[in-house]
Each structure stands twice: as C-alpha cells, then as structure tokens.
Length: 177
Image 1 (cartoon, rainbow, N blue to C red):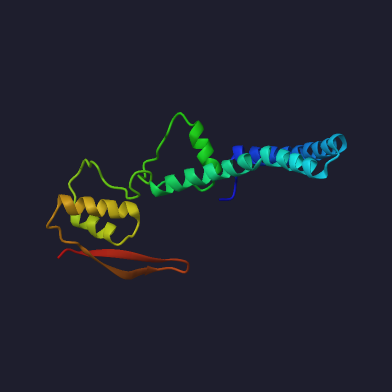
Image 2 (image 1 turned 180 degrees about the vertical axis):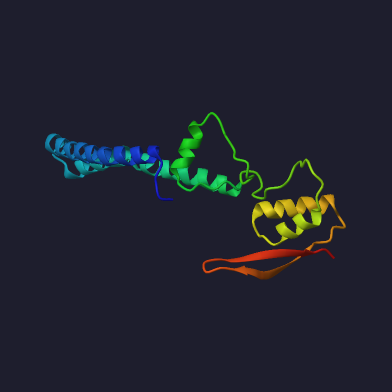
C-alpha cells in the first residue's frame, strides 16, 4: 500500500500537533503543582497523568488499525485494493460500475449467450481459441465445448509461402480430422 487514506493522513497530522500541545500542558501542569504544592512527587504524578489521559495514541493507532481491518476483511472476501486510500473512496461511493471482463465477479470471462448469424465450422473456432491462454479465449473454448460436446479440433499447419525483404507472410491451411 503506497498511499495512506486521507483520514489517516489527517489523524497523523492532528496527532502531531496534539502531542506537542499535550506535552506543553503537562509541563505547565507539573510546574504549577510543583510551585503551589511544593511537592515534586505529586507534581510529577499529576504531570504524567495529563500525558497518559490525553495521549493521542487512540487517535494515532485506531485509524490505521481500522484501515488494516477493512483491508483484511475485504481480502478474505476476495476484494483487493491497490492502495489503502481506495477503501476510503469506496465508502463514499453511491454507484458501482463494472466492466464487461468479469474480473469483479469470477475473474473468468464466459459466454452467456451467442447468436450465430451465418453458418460456420465450430471446429475452426475451437481450434483457434484452443491455441491461446487468454481468459476470453478460454471462455469461448469452454462455451463451444459445452455446446458441441463431440467437437473435433481442426489442426493448423504453418507454411512459409510468401517472402519479401521485410516480412514473411504465412498462410494457414486447415486439416479437419
């Protein structure tokens, strides 16, 4: 996590000022009690009591602890945040917009519905998507496999046919078995 949430930055800034003010008040309290009561022990106890009671530790520790708890709970549920500040941003959100990749839901895109406008050989498409490890290709491959259970994958053979100075063009021949 590279960036702290805004509330944590504010708490750290306030804690810095608050600590300085509390130490000054504790010193003044110690001096006041020492001068009026003329007892070093009582003045020290009262001065330390001011520091202990007014310690900003609760503010300085509670905010990062709440952030860690929120990130931990979300990680257990499979939601990861790149930065801790995104957790604070999500708390202020009214709308959640998702993209079409499916990474929010399963992380595995899948075909829900397909409409074929022209007839084609599904074994060619199956062979093509089977050569790729891309998540969308895997989703298409799974869909074709469920729709055409006894599908035979076409095989591809690469031949060097056309050679020029800059490019070598390859033609793909299909052999359906």
